[in-house]
Length: 429
Image (cartoon, rainbow, N blue to C red):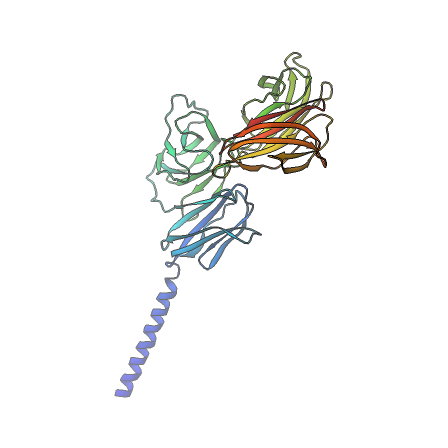
């Protein structure tokens, strides 16, 4: 009897172990969280993201967006690195709840990376409404207001549906009526539109998140639209607007007007003058330039792509009878703390390549005619800038007092002819 009892007890122990093992295996999902990732690191290229001992994201490109990935719950170390690099640019510990859904956005720049995480678990809204929240990852813009309106509705007397979403912040959930609606973002307490999605369709009893981020414009932003559900779908919703400016660098040419697809956009820009940025619908357009004195006579034209939420400069170069339009893609990110950003553009006539010296130290070598350098950072100060003929110490233009303010982005144009050179400094942000 004791032997049989012992066998029964052993059998019960084995069954208990099996049940316990099954319980442990079945709880593996309850010991996990779900995360999706977005790369809004504007100048960093592709990124890798490690969560704990796993790497759920590799080589995610700028504006890339994943679906939900299963990761371990609990406090996890999250490391972000730029693909091909050897260093970690973000290293933080975050608590992740079991079975919870999260969106993790990497934004900022490679030299000053940032991140924001949101919890995507939202109660299903009542019939007749949808829920919307906004995350602001547009680090160069400041607070934003959100308008959700009937298509084409004026904002003049409208109040924002969501107000003053700070950089790095996420709004609460706004309850709205579903349908096909226009989404616009403005600067806080302003009607200046910095993002226009056009029309988007929002479904009944669904919840959505919008992530605003920068593509390098001085003010404009782009956005991704995410569903806050277990399925976790999402996509980039490119803005319908871009902006461009015109710089007059054609000696001997009178004041000029700029047209977009035949419609006047910028007017009466003098030689060595630069316009402010003007809004235009995103996409490829024909930009033509005429002199104010001879309307209808096109002296230069270009077809810049004017991508969504980007800035573009169009420079009139050459001399009368031989003018052309040079298109530059502007990157108006703010500099590092206490620093300004500056690029150099050589549009001098007949001069050839130049070397650029800042406070008598070489900064750019052999900058060709009608070419732009990369952006460089300088601490806030006043600088002596020399342009020398490339490969020589022959100074062709000395600018003894060029003032740069921290937090701003500039372009310095070398303009004119060999007998009459000048520098034109524009603040582009």
